[in-house]
Length: 398
Image (cartoon, rainbow, N blue to C red; front, side):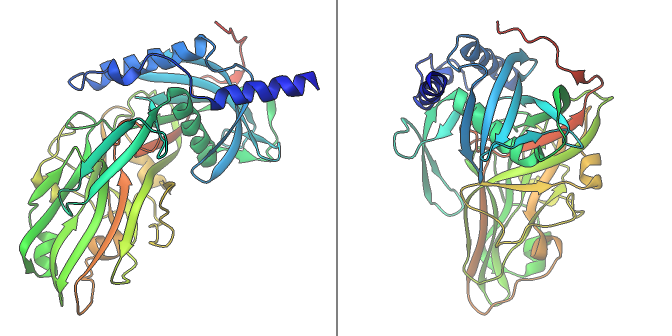
């Protein structure tokens, strides 16, 4: 009974926002991604070291459609991020395994440019106002700086992607590495953003789809898949998104086992019942540190997943996970910045003019890297086989 009460008290402790120096106040917007990542990683690892997160205690986390118990064993700073050793269980107590066959008990989660904020629409003291230059819509987000919880949410979602329940787990093993990569905020490498074509005078589908870009967004809080029809077969707007990822931290000798691109659904609409699908493709922007309007026509047409996501499946308020196939995995570079595109599949890529006799809009919106460094930003989750794996070494609790 005493052990049970102690567990409850420690669990309650984790749900109470802790007091620590505000990381976001340490970061200069003019700093490089490398500098920003070093500051965040050092502070996060320090919080674990100082005991702000009880070690070897299960913490229940509900996030993005999954509820899991997570036990953190070790946290340390690595170049560009943090490395976390963790175990996980389902809500019924079933151990979750990792690795290709699910036999690994302890996963090594590497989180680069780690998030430090979480959504808190009720008590969030960090207010982010954003005006959509396309629709003029004002979007407000309330956030709470809580690096510990941001890391727990990141791991919970990664467990959803790569974990395997009811596998034959081998005790004390560390196998695969799950690495999480985020783009950078603003016009910084690796950049993300939305080049688009927007015209005042409605034009044909061919002119809209194949014409040059007119605008580009690199500091907006969301990515947009959007098309607007003004009248019968005449259109005014089409958007595409470019997302660059720096996965060069993965050893060139490692084998990439899986790649998942995840977009947190912010909103969607389909006023003309056209059911727009979405998928990932390659891109060839002029730069990986900024985007220009000419990048509108620099996106590919070969699916990186082989399975576009339907409009019905795109979920608001959760991550939408796109699992890459062999083609997509092969296009994730371990030696250079990887360049991808997120855009509409059944009209834009297929080159099929949406039909309709009146005006309509379809939109899919997801958080970009400019979402203030939250656990909801667009990201790539990559599992790769490390050169060396095996039994867990002795863990030192600082």
